[in-house]
Image (cartoon, rainbow, N blue to C red; front, side, top):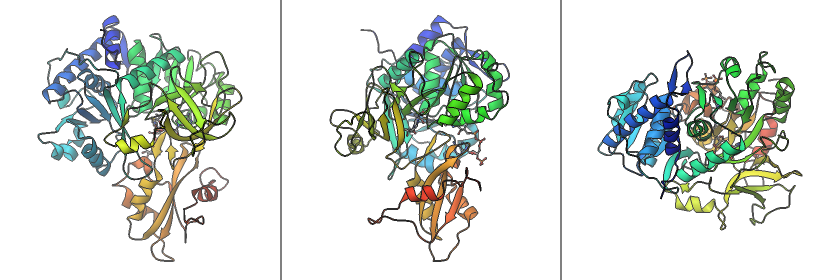
Length: 508
Ligand code: MCA
Ligand code: AMP
């Protein structure tokens, strides 16, 4: 029987077919071919095996974006390991939790952060380094490991942590089947081919940059302009040599602010994709008016990969909607209480089913069970309705979550950090509209002593060691008390209304 076509195998097939084709096009004109990447993958695989990685072992990575980081991902899949990418913004306290919880066999960090992590090394964990210029202990050896672990569709391929609305972060375990099937559905839906040249300006430690953007390139034999971060000027400069851009809404807000965005600058582009957070209908319309391109909006989640997409062809890309289910995936809107499907047009809980849906939360069987219906549908926590054309519209979130520039911030985590300050009695953290990040984090704080005035700078310095920078409140407001309903629950909707114009109103 033929082995299951994992992302690694599909990449290896492309590398054999077009060894001299550039896979990564880097700033400054350097490129890295499929052959070179395949060799780096085999070298890293040899190192991982020497470090004791066996099928099912976790390989954690917290490094800056580089071609070698992608090679590490592929090498982990090759040897049957479970890839665990971590945001470079995570602090020591956050890293401590992930390493303890996931128990990786290998932790790969940036050379300059080795001192922060060296103490973790013991008989069960090897700490390796990987820099951005081909440096680091991971690349010390010249030996290559050619053997490929024959993974089954249901075997774990990756763990991605998503914060929880209560308590600890949960590791979403994604299988080889999840990654491969979702990638194939996107390649088909967006007509992605070897002729595409993708502008890759997303981080590679989340689903969007790794399992959507990079996987599609790796498995089709396409090329990517591989940027360490998003910069509107750089992206505009690359567009005449590119065909596709995938980004979060902030990319498009920033591109719209640039005069150079014209039909001529987009002449060779065939597709602009947006996701991870709601794209303003006004930005969608403005982009089309400026360039002639209707941005294609799609909807996904860490636990499910991509669920729905607006059409590539055969129908309009409707502003404010996320389109229809991808091939093989089913999406429904139900009454959150009873789980019964609702008629089109009514707002309810969005649920999904399909080969894209994850296998469960790492070592949390009860939490996993509580997020699935008996018939196997996953409860996303998003609220939506199906419109008159059968397109899904996301109208809100059942979960308490802020999405800032495409990055998720769970208010509970920020509130716990603030509440630990001696001058704080309690806090409520909310998301308010922001012109650049879509939404941003605002903290509303009640002082421990009536009339007290905890300093904003002091509170921000206090939470800094516990929270990655993107989770920090962009404003702190001190109030006498928080608005509560009769049940004593803090009314965040009321707070959101009160501070709605903080960054976008007339006084912003
Ligand atoms: C950077 N900062 C942020 C964010 N990013 N603060 C809040 N929210 C953010 N998203 C901080 C920086 O640390 C810096 O702090 C300050 O804000 C300004 O940084 P700037 O240079 O403007 O930021 P940037 O480097 O240009 O980054 C903005 C960005 C980036 C391009 C929007 O955050 C980004 O690439 N986001 C994409 C994230 C992503 O891939 N999400 C997909 C998750 P200081 O003031 O101290 O200097 S996957 C997902 O959601 C699902 C599955 C899906 O559907 O895709
Ligand atoms: P995460 O699991 O961190 O990747 O975040 C997933 C969440 O991002 C989803 O549950 C949605 O709330 C949100 N999301 C992703 N794509 C979109 C979109 N196109 N429109 C609105 N929300 C989105």
